[in-house]
Length: 84
Image (cartoon, rainbow, N blue to C red; front, side, top):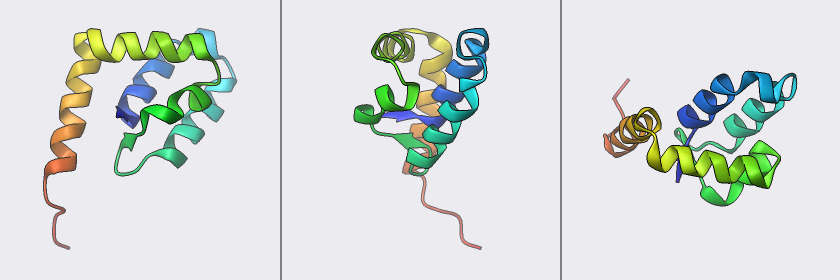
């Protein structure tokens, strides 16, 4: 599982690399996200490139900033929804 927050950070951190395509990447990520979670099987199609997907995976699993985002998202997913 990946998180929407990680995709958003990755796109922001690599804005120059994505250019105008960043908008489409974020739209795809948001449309595939379920409560902030994104299945691993979709990340290549979201990012649009196999090499970017590999780099993204490496960062998400090794970079403390991304690991923190995953931990926060995981905690949010395991909390019961708030009552209105």
